[in-house]
Image 1 (cartoon, rainbow, N blue to C red):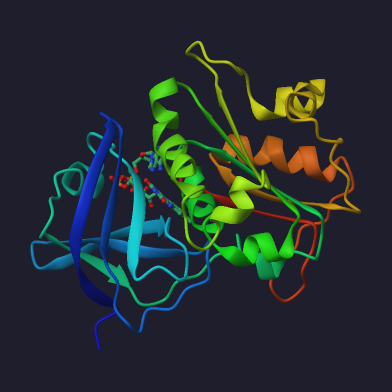
Image 2: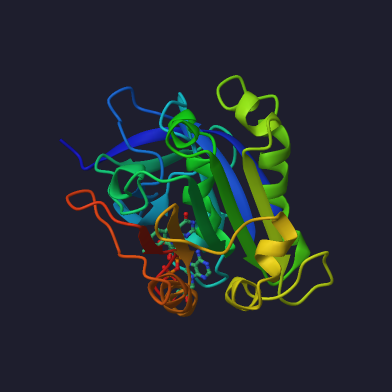
Length: 257
Ligand SMILES: Cc1cc2nc3c(=O)[nH]c(=O)nc-3n(C[C@H](O)[C@H](O)[C@H](O)COP(=O)(O)OP(=O)(O)OC[C@H]3O[C@@H](n4cnc5c(N)ncnc54)[C@H](O)[C@@H]3O)c2cc1C
């Protein structure tokens, strides 16, 4: 049996010359936990050309969604950026990953910190009702250089109040979507680490400072972002978790750079 299923592209949306999203069919046997990643790609010269991708759709969804970078000379994405409805993509059969609810101890608030395409696993988790069953408040932060790079997340969250599964939680204000830029003008600017350290992040949303007794964290971004955000949590006494030994925070790289 091949390590991949062949799925049909159902919809493609481009946000900037560097970012796009697409939806595909989902093999009935494909099971994953919201927040996990899987190898996906294209058949090139008769061979699979695949890369790791977070599944951006929640585990209950009958379709799969992916949120992708376009690297101009990237082996996969220089081709993947041209896919259209009706084309096929390869999707691995074995999803894995650390950004899953089972890797965290029970808590009151879930903080999900992301930059760039690191928002993708959280696009899955904020659409999963289990996230709201486990946590009273769900806070997802998305920091990008340019304002246009925030659009996928903004449009997704705007539609959630109407969502049949999580809409009532979102309408009740239990989801906070914090958007910020580091280059363009925007209502909130600066790195999440700077905003947490200065306290402005907490003041913006009327939240108490991070507390390992009540708060849990997930981090997804570049290697540099991971290092600085891990330090944010660890300096406040948070302990890293895993499915075999749940803890107070988990992290995953959004790409190998
Ligand atoms: C666990 C994991 C999950 C991932 N999930 C996603 C995802 O959901 N969406 C996604 O677009 N990519 C994701 N990636 C990155 C992805 O695997 C590929 O690197 C990306 O699709 C580019 O593939 P490529 O063959 O075109 O270029 P590659 O040869 O893979 O990458 C070329 C260079 O482009 C840069 N780069 C690659 N990916 C990104 C990115 N996402 N953001 C900024 N710079 C990047 C890096 O500097 C890299 O060295 C993930 C990677 C890992 C390890």
